[in-house]
Image (tube, rainbow, N blue to C red; front, side):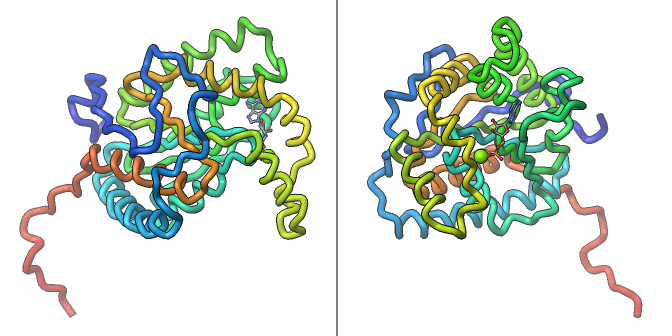
Amino acid sequence: MAGLSPALLAGHIPALPPAAAGIVTIEPGRPCLLSRIDPDADGGLDKDEAKAALSVERARIQGLQERLYGEGKRSLLVVFQAIDTGGKDGTIRSVLEGVNPQGCRVWSFKVPSTEELDHDFLWRYHKRTPGRGMIGVFNRSHYEDVLVVRVKDLVPEEVWRARYGLINDFERLLTASGTTVLKFFLHISKDEQKERLESRIADPEKHWKFDPADLVERRSWDAYQAAFDDALTRCSTPYAPWHVVPANRKWFRNLIVARTIADTLEAMNPQFPAAAEGIAGLTVPD
Ligand code: AMP
Ligand code: MG
């Protein structure tokens, strides 16, 4: 455990800053009702203002990521969940633009392999959590095991029901070990999903993104919303709360996610290690 401060070893969990204005953070212990959250919200901004503000946030993330890497003691895990076409890929591409790829890893989780299914459900996710100094991004995550698994009835109810508590324990372990966990749910409306699917069908350049299975999943829209409500209610904790991002407007979504990541890194306050004595003024021999 070299490199961890006594506070981290004692399981101290750092205070998290509030999410950017426009995001609805689910208060631990209070029910999440997605139907009450407006996916169209845009904070009264227009697209150009939001784009200019986004470049500022990206620059903050880039600078703070370098410090996190230089410090090499803690890490940040950013989790994205959404319904199909909700914008996980687009948000990751936009928000992490310009971040040093050496300090950041993105993992996308698909249908589990037989080897993964032969282990406990958290095994494949735990292996991918970020090491010290790193930013890790989960495009889908351990929450799939209480979302698609529940909606499609892939395991008995008592099995998925037990997982909410196990997920909270897992995230507690991560945060107590120096990994800050930031969870974003990208919230789009059913009409917006229809438009996005139609635009994938209409544009041959987007055909590769169109998955006919998404049309089948769309029939289970209400069951997914209920599963999201439950997961966000049961797994919003003081150490790893859920953030609901109005995501019908991509430019607003990108801005508030980027701002929240930047604010979180800033609150972590990573520090470059102190320089060794006597470096300043050294001369390099010919
Ligand atoms: P995509 O992200 O669109 O490439 O699709 C990945 C697919 O994998 C989605 O349909 C997910 O629902 C599915 N998936 C991800 N994790 C799991 C899991 N733990 N169990 C079953 N299906 C999963
Ligand atoms: Mg898909």
